[in-house]
Amino acid sequence: MRCGPDPVKSPAGSGPSELPKSIDLQQYGDQIHEYAPTTGVNELRQAVATYYNDTFRNDNSELKPFTYENVCIVPGGRAGLTRIASVIGDAYTGYQLPDYTAYEQLLTICH
Image (cartoon, rainbow, N blue to C red):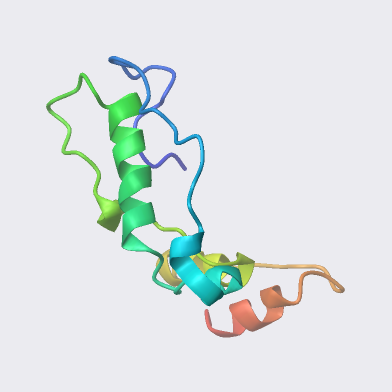
């Protein structure tokens, strides 16, 4: 499943946004080693949307630009799998035991 235009076939425009050389993490204080909120950080989500728009959609004015609402960044694998399962709906799924422990818990919410 592709979520957006094919980057190989999309016009590149003037090129990608410039990436930062460093990021000041001191602004986050003591919580720097904590998980991000499960809804993500809007500033990071918007930065990803802006990067994607600048890199792959720069010359295509007929497409509506992505915003932070179109980007999902999760704090871990379990949260990501749960988000995916919540939009898939009913599906027949099998998995092998022993395996990643989140699968069994994840599948119980999808029945």
